[in-house]
Image (cartoon, rainbow, N blue to C red):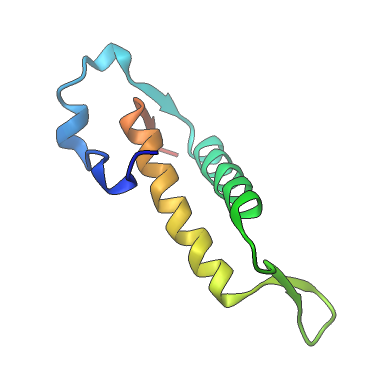
Length: 90
């Protein structure tokens, strides 16, 4: 398994790729894609409970799992970018 920290960061990696190889993704699809992938990774890798019931009886993500989700989402977005996807203007 590769280390996510070894993935090239930022536009410097993409400027070496030919523009025709990049895929512009509408913002709503970009958000949905990284959120769905991040949630999938979290749910399939977590050993601890992800959700708890709040005072209103709603099921909410625990604070630790919310932080973990955000970290996963950052990595997923970076993978999307290094794969040639980029978020379009919306």
